[in-house]
Length: 192
Image 1 (spheres, rainbow, N blue to C red):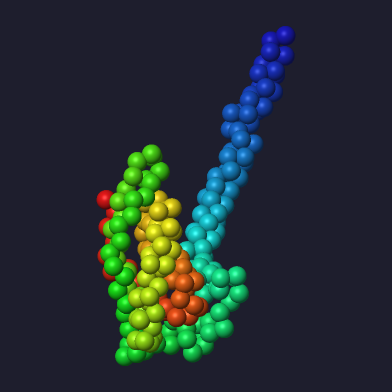
Image 2 (cartoon, helix red, strand yellow):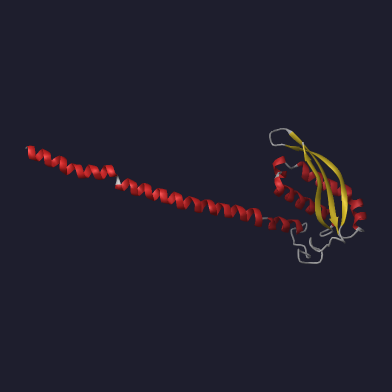
């Protein structure tokens, strides 16, 4: 019997050593670590690429919206046409100053914020300034209606400022006619 007792512990010892070494758990842990070290950076890079694409390449739709007419049709002059944004040289651009506007907006937490903003409109023809004078109440009404619906987070950062410019450009061209005003320039902007 003494021999049998010695044989059993020896026979059990290799099994327990394999279990303690944990070759199976190490392989599973190694595969998981490999998946994390390779897969996670790939996912992060893919998400970063998508974010960069949306931030850098996503502005085309907004510019397209700004050039669209009242009923959604695309303006004939586009970016490559004679009346586009890039057609006016430094010498033949004129600026029309919009009086300073003060608007109260909601801040999202039940309170209010005050926006003080001044714009300049870029026009190619100095004669258009007379038409802008005549239509200034309509333009201001369009701007006020839009600005009152904004929240401070809508105006945050350069992307917020660009969306603001494009929407105001669309609204002034609804009043004046498509392509009359080439750009809206924000000359003063304060949120308090």
